[in-house]
Picture (spheres, rainbow, N blue to C red):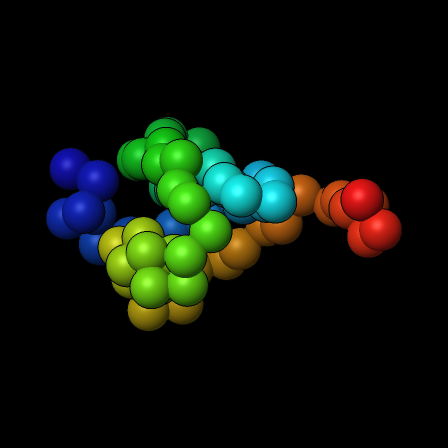
Length: 67
């Protein structure tokens, strides 16, 4: 179901230095996919492509500058 869902999707992103976690959800809050990825731009693009053309994206606020 996760890759074939045609409705509006939301993507939550928890970014870390080497790896990040992305969660795709429906408007109703149903979880479609949770993916832990290495921070590779191409892999991120592939995961985001599964969220459709214009997903809403929520990024966890961080304060990693200087660490």
